[in-house]
Image 1: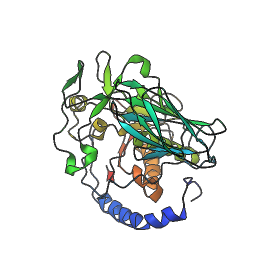
Image 2 (image 1 turned 90 degrees about the horizontal axis):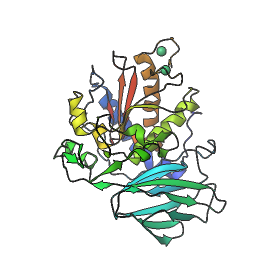
Image 3 (image 1 turned 180 degrees about the vertical axis):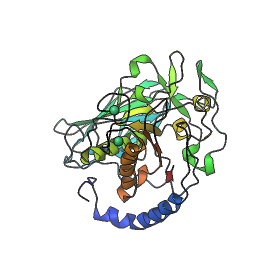
Length: 355
Ligand SMILES: [Ca+2]
Ligand SMILES: [Ca+2]
């Protein structure tokens, strides 16, 4: 498929062929039981379609031929994520030891890593252990090759969270004590990112800023949010694919990113395990004309569910590819309502869910 622009390797393909087949059959099975939805606040707790969510990240890399502002000529791997995007967020607990590894590409190194805080220990050629500072905040890490080209990791040290319904005066609400189906991805977060006004504009990936994912609940700063690197990589890969399809999209509008459990309940969401509360879901639409509504993607001069479906079909096609396997998750299509236009829900829950 000419628009498919991810790196593939023979070894990877061979390894993933059995995965692909099991994935496709599981996907087909889950699609036979669509879950209807009538409200923007509804999100399905769909039973697992794929058993193994612990598989290491295979690919989060864009083909380096994409434009230079999109990709560095090498990649970086950390916390089971890998990317060659020139800026990406990393989230760590205070004092956490994070292994960081350069992934040679067009550029073979040698690589240097610098840190704004914490301590760096070399662990071999192109490998380091970064020990995060104790104090919450943003501590950029910059990985640079011999030619001075770099990847900036926006490393956020989180504030420990032990299930309090309020954190420094910010209402969080209650996470479920038991993870859904016992899956680690549904465990209560151990930390939250403390948000002060000056952090809102900080980039978390080439096309998104931290403030776009903030919960919409009212209240003074500091506020808190949860955001996962994998969602950011997924959104960037999806945007790249949307552009490769010839759709005019400079970014996605994030209609809803993180939601505290309290806010999620307050807006009438009956789903107690919303991925929005676990930091890896986004409700998105494309709005190049700036009217606040999904653009007309299917050419019928209206903004409707059919336009959400155009975007959803691209998500579906990506998730059918073995290189996209780490990013599999939920896909929900929503039409226009009085209080919002059409949009698409995506997340990285680790198994296929469709509604
Ligand atoms: Ca629009
Ligand atoms: Ca349309």
